[in-house]
Image 1 (cartoon, rainbow, N blue to C red):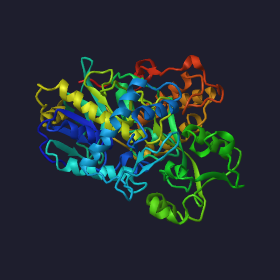
Image 2: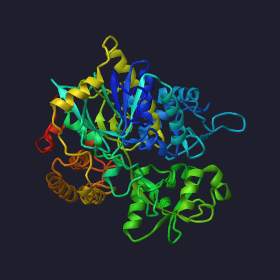
Image 3: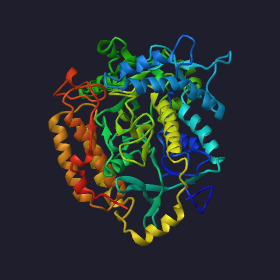
Image 4: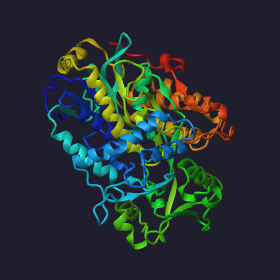
Length: 536
């Protein structure tokens, strides 16, 4: 555990998660004291640092927020919230300027202008990036430097949130535990506001591009606190994860296809030309399913960057180049084997434009939230933008609501909890459940992956119920994973059509009657009897 203020005397909010959304929220809440609760050291464990492509924003003279919004709505397959899309795209240029002021070193043209790239489903070049394919890492460097010099932020590392505490229908704090719990038990952190910025659910799948800690914990915690959830069935599978036997799977950025790289099978067949008019620059769900079908039919799939990039690869995409070379592949001269991998969750905890959830005292931002920005299929490079826009808006909303409220005595609450409350879980994690976790990930990839059907989803739900009983209350991490997986399967079973990132082979067509967002109230899913709700 590390903090700027070891006593952790008070806090206006606890922010759970250290990616772009969480760090932005913490900084925007200054000078109000906040606790930044991280399950890993600051700068690691968040998906942001792994993001290669960039941030989308209408920065070019011929572009506009309205055109950016139009592209976002088009990719979203009909169910994005147009007002949220307009808000995010209009605030995007200001977010870029804020990051520049914070020290983010975006790539520039020889003339000093922002170098703008293009990715799938964008009608113009509007992707700002850092170091070619190191945007996430570059943004994290700037944000971390700012956090480390901000006296109002207490950073607590290697401590994982397990549950949200509720009292009289309001979230009033967090149960947390040290990752290397030595038997001291959980901590009860009582605060006026809790912000979930815990990232996505990629760790629920056998093949993912997400860091290991992205296992749906925030989604599960919010569900058990009674929060409304939305669009959980929409999971984005990145079509071009490097298929080189590593877990998590290294990403071959979509920007490579934006620069002209093409997809071929082992026969040299450029199959995407038959799948979509935009070929390799089709929306991600289209490309992922096309690759999935190729692999189902026994083919191997490769990304061919030789003609598009050749000898310039190492300079223009150093991150991808280094990852490929480490696996013995020279992408300047060799084909890169690729496969779809769980990459981004469009759904999550339902929020309004200020990050408020349906439960008072609880906000959410970033990938764990479902604002309506992404609809059924996220437009490339809108994820980092979402973290900046809604991390800031959540912070401003919390500040406005608690303008006259004093910060809570966090340290006292810790001592009181140890004396008065028993632990819900025996441990944060337990090694003997590792085989169960592996079964979970294989089950989700098989039945709730790129292609789904009713029989598979029902089979998955039956197995997940058994796994919940098997896990019991032995591990907070595993129980939250199982709850999150079950919720995704329920949402996927309920949407009897194919739309965006959700493809049902038993309902392969898009149904105009279902052109709406989905909402789920966990108390009607069977989760509540199996994992007891914790109250203050």
